[in-house]
Amino acid sequence: MNLESTERSTAELYEQVAALLSQKDWDAAFSYVRQLCDRHPDYGPAWELRGILEVQLEHPHVAIHCLERASLLTPLDPLSSRLLALQYIVVERRQLGIDLLVELANSCKSMPPLIRLISQDLVGHGCLGAATDVLNVGLERFPACAMLWHELSAVQSRQGISLETCLRSVSHAVALSPHVADFRISAAMLMIKLNLAEEAYHCVRLIPLDELRCVSCDCCVWRLIHIFDCFNDRDRLRRCYEQLRYLHRSEQERDFRNSTAAGMDCPPK
Image (cartoon, rainbow, N blue to C red; front, side, top):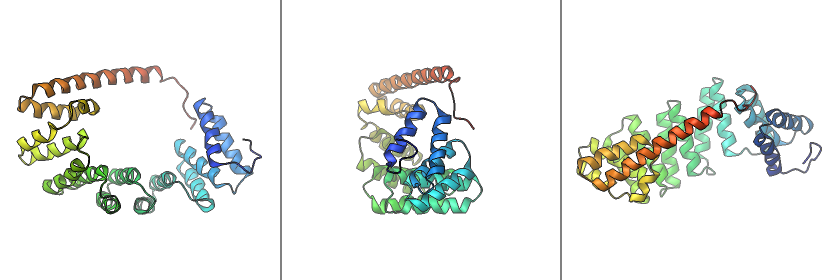
């Protein structure tokens, strides 16, 4: 694909830029997209991609200009719309950004992963009520989505809503996806706060032993260790300690990789 072609697809454009970025040729990637915008000013996908790249460069005003220009030429990808909303917040157009996030989450095109991501954006910006609202709207459309029920319980907890209400929400997640360890751990923690220790143990003891290997948070593993120790469940205790050692070993390996990669090229600012 070359700059003179007017019959390019969005997929080809992203493929070309991805190839340059994979070679760590940042200058060539940014130059390519900027030239494409200059030569084909009505080509929306190029402006959209340039906006995404400008976000990575931490140029919020330029990113907003590019994404707004793209939105006038072609429907933005929902994730691009989310980036635009977040850039509004960065440049202190906070309410516009929050409103756009809520609108995007409530759109009929938004799927559960995006709804959850936006709810986390809203929580991060102190909009707990808005986060709860978008999750409730999402659950009206996707009532069988365990992930959204779990997220709702977490936001309700941060809002200070009653433990019983939070437990009801996460219990929906457990019922819908009984094999997911994280859901059961969250439910058990709420049960313990409600002085339901035995119920908490019965909740987490139903986590398949193999699923304990999927618990990636050492705090969660320690919570399980506390529960299993209280009920003298030695087999599950052993599995939890094995997982804890695995997580610590993985963290050490990751730190080593990061230290050796510290000198690698980064995108120019």
